[in-house]
Structures are given as structure tokens and as C-alpha cells.
Amino acid sequence: MRLALRTTVQVCLVSLLLIFSIHESRAQQASAVASGKTGRTVGEEAGARKTDPLVTDSRYRIGPGDVLEVRVARAPELSRDAVRVDQGGNIRMPMLDVDIPAACQTEGELSQNIAKLYRKYKNDPHVDVFVKDFQSQPVAVIGAVHGAAQFKMQRQVRLLELISLAGGPTDGAGQTIQVVHAGGGPICQQSGGPGSDGTDSSAFVTYKLSDTLHGLAEANPFVQPGDIISVPLADQVFVLGNVRKPSAISLKEPLTVSHAIAIAGGTAPSTKRDKVRIIRQVPGSTQKQEIFVDLNAIDKNKAVDVALLANDVVDVPISGTKSILRSLLGTVVPTISQLPVRVIP
Image (cartoon, rainbow, N blue to C red; front, side, top):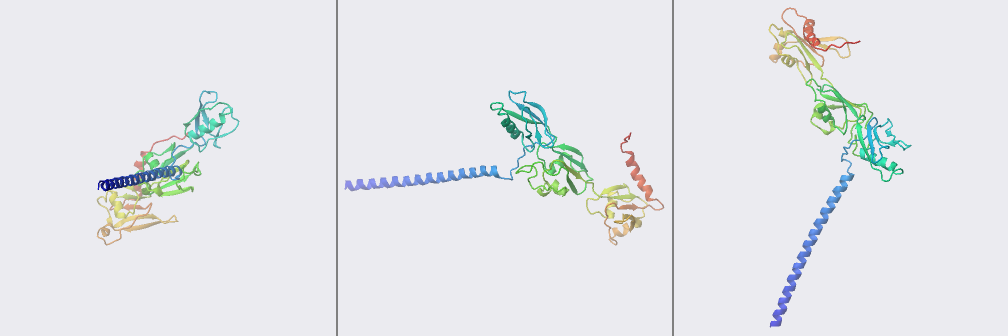
């Protein structure tokens, strides 16, 4: 009896130990699998970061015209305060009878290459390279911006950022941005380098201003060295005559004659509202076309509110005789008097 009981207890204990061992083993296996999966994921992500062509290398790439400072540790005779990169993209250094390629390299990459060349003269030379004067990547922003200027890029810059650095578009800016690739394309064509994001390398590209200002990828490329970015003025129409504020109005969106007159402050007293005249240049000709508009009929929805075209002149007549020439002079002369005076020697 006691023997049977003892045997039963031993079997139960062995069973419990076996179950616990199996449970622990499964837990360790699950943990190991989880750890192994996490390790592979991190490794895969690290590898992806190294090989992913979409990861942008924003380091500055040396170019022709840049001035470099090269320091060789414990060898002042080999150091140089100012070394200009020639138009071929090379530099020359003391004791080296070869041109050293510098263009399209970072400061660190060029440092390592120069150090390798000096190893036949020095034991484990340490070289530092610094860009002292950035000259290889100028771009210009002109036109209807608040601060037209030339910029020297020390890193990659997108079109929207450059327009912002130029103060943004003025109220008179049109609907487009024109980019002229005067530099002939990116200096360095490489993965992750300037211009590798699919930037159009044609000589002339136009983007919609509103798309660029909203940061849309297709209208916000990296700027290329030598680019000239122009923000053209919007087309204009001119409202003259018996209005409260004769003015030129930017044609940024569809504009009708009644709307243009409203922007010009509306008609002044004694206006011949049924004889408003639109003077329009006939396309491809030196002739002009006259279109007469009845504002009273437009107000009553009895006539079409004529859409204006670029360079249309809206002449709002006054009862009696008042020529458009006098209206034009009254608008233009005050503007001319405000212009700066420059002497031509």
C-alpha cells in the first residue's frame, strides 16, 4: 500500500516537473524567436538605410571655383590657407605632382584622399579640408519677389525654400515660376546627391506658383547650381478715366470689366456708364479693337459682363469730353516722378 502510494507520488512529481520543463522550454523558444525576429528587423532596417537610394545625402559637394583650406597635422609646409578648385574640378598640393580630383567630394572624402597621397612622405598623415569660400553653386532669384538676390548654396535647397529666402512672391506676382538651368544640370549625378530626386534637367522648366507654395513634390524640386529662378509679374489690365482709383490690376484670375472697375474704386460722379470702352490689341496685329460696354445693363443682368484679357485698357468716360490720353498721363506721371534718378556718364 505504502509502496503504491509512494510510486504514485513520484509519478505525479515527475509529471509536474516534465510539464514545467516543457512550458519553460516553449517560453524560452518563443522569447528567442521574438528576439531573433527583432534582431533581423533592425539589421534589415540598418541595411536599408545604407542602400536606400531615397535617403538624401545633404552634405555639401565641392565644386569648381570653391576655395579650400587644407591642413596637414604637424606639417605646416604642406598646409595651404587657400586652394581654389579649378574648372576641371582639381586642386594641386605641395610635393604632389598630380592633379587631385576635388569636385563632387565632401570635405571628409577629399581629406582621406589627400592623406593617402601623402603616406609616401609621412607616417599616417592627418589631413583636414574645409570649404573656405563657397563659389561653385550660385543661384539667382529675380522677378516679382520681395528680395531678389543671388544665393551661394552650402547645401541642397528646394525651390520653395529658395523662394522663401527671397522674401516670397509680391502681390503682383503671376501664376508661374520659371526655372532656367543655366548651369547645365547638376554638378554631381549620384545616388542621394543633388538632382538625383528626378529633377528635370531640361534647360527651361515652368511650375505653377500655387503648387510650389503648397510644397507639392512635383513643383518643389531641388535647385541646381547655376539656376535662375524667375517669378514673372502677372499680366495686367488698365482701368483709366472717371474712376476713383485709376490703376493697373494684376490679372491673376479671370476678371470681368465690372469687377475691374470695382477694384479701381468704382465709377466717379458724372460717368457715362453706358459708354464704357475696352481697348484691346488684336493678336498678331498692330490694330486695336474697341468694345463698348453698358454697365447699367450689366447690373440688371441684361448684358454680358465682358471678360478682360491681358493688356486690355478700360476707359470709363465722363460726361463731356475727356480724352484717354489725359487719363493715362494722370496715372503715369506721378509714378514716373517717384522713380530714382541715375546718371549715365
